[in-house]
Image (cartoon, rainbow, N blue to C red):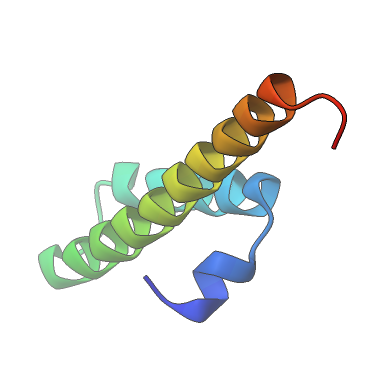
Length: 68
């Protein structure tokens, strides 16, 4: 996962994933290009998953300690 993927907002990550899916759905994409796009998508998906997990943890912390 690159620093760039970590710094993207979740909405930007979702948009990027959507664009990558469209590229993968193109029947004219070459195999090597498809693999590169897939790999990039997996890295973005991992970063998005981490962002969601971090948000969930923050919500849990706030819920358990409302005075903070």
